[in-house]
Amino acid sequence: MKQKTWPDRSDGVRFTAFPLSKPNENEDKIRLSRRSKIGSKPPLPSPADGTDFSALPFDILMKIAASFNFPNLLAASLVCRSWRDGLRPLREAMVLLRYGKRFKHGRGGVRRNLDKALDSFLKGAACGSTLAMVDAGLIYWERGLKEEAIVLYQKAAVLGDPAGQCNLGISYLHAQPQNQKEAVKWLYQASMGGHVRAQYQLALCLHQGLGVHRNLHEAAKWYLRAAEGGYVRAMYNASLCYSSGVGLSQSRRHTRKWMRRAADRGHSKAQFEHGLALFSEGEMMKAVVYLELATRSGETAATHVKNVILQQLSATARERALLLADNWRALPSSR
Image (cartoon, rainbow, N blue to C red; front, top):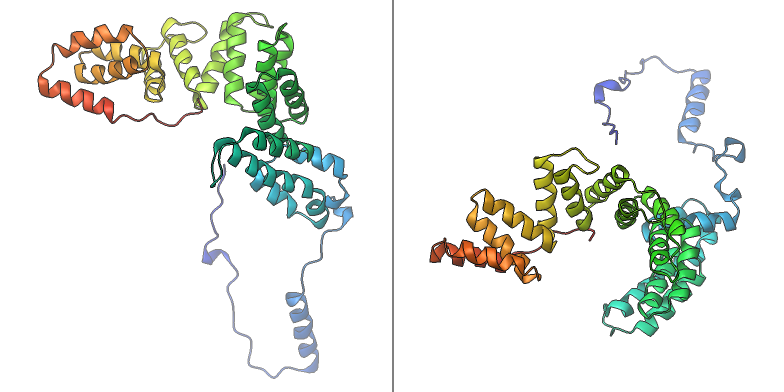
C-alpha cells in the first residue's frame, strides 16, 4: 500500500501580518464575507455528483453485504441513513451469529448446545447472513444431513461467500454421486477470493485430475499460493513439489523452507521428514526433537530412527532434546 506522509510545515502558506492602516467600511464587508465563507460548512454531495448512496436498492445492498463480517457491516451502516436502515437485518444476524458460536463452543458462560447453536444460525441465515448459513451448514453436515447442508452452502456461495463456495465444492466431492465439475467450479471461485483451503483443494483436483484435466504445473501453483496463505498441508505439498521438480523448479532451499514451516505448524509427516534431513546433516539433537514430535503424532517410522540417534547422544543431550519436545508448541496456521 502506498503511504502518504503528513506535509511539512514549510509546505503550507506562510502567515503575514495585516497592515496597521485604518480599515474602511468596504474592507469590513470584505472581512465579514471571508469569515462567513470560512465558518460555513461545505455543501453536502448531491445525487448529480454520483455519490447518492441512498439510491441503491435494498435488495442489492443486502446481497452486497451478505458476507460482511461485523466491522465491515458496521462501517457500511454508517455510510448513510438509508444504508443503516437497510442493513438492520444483517446487524441482527450478527447478534444471532455470536449467540450461535457461544452455544456451539460452550463459551461466554453457556454450556455447549448444538441444538441452540443451530437455531441461532438458522435465524441469522434467515436474516440474510452468509456467515450464519455456513455455520448452520457445518452443523447439518456433521449430523449427516448433507442435503440440508448443501442447500445452505449453495445460498452462501451464490451470494459470493468464499467459505460457502469452498464448502459447497468439497461437499460435491463427497456427495453420492460426486459432481466433480461443479466442485472445481466453486473451488476455483473461492480460490480466486483468497480462501486458502479452497486453493489447496483445487490443487488436489488439478493434481489428481478430478473434474478437470490433470495439470501438475497449475496444481503446484495453487499449492504454493495456499502455502503462502498459511495452509499447513499445502506447505508440505509445496515442499514435495520443490523436492521432486513436479510443477516447480527443483530447489533444495525451498524444499527445506516449506518442510520446516509445515513441521513447525504440527504436520506430522513434515516433522518426520525434517527430522531425517537434520539427521543427515549431523544436527542430532534437533533431529531428535522433530522425530519425537512425529512419533507422538503417530508416525511410527520415526521411532526407530529416533532411538538410533538417542544411542549416540549423551544422557544430558537426550534429556535436553526430550525437554524441548515437551515444551514445543505449534506455530499458528490456517490448517
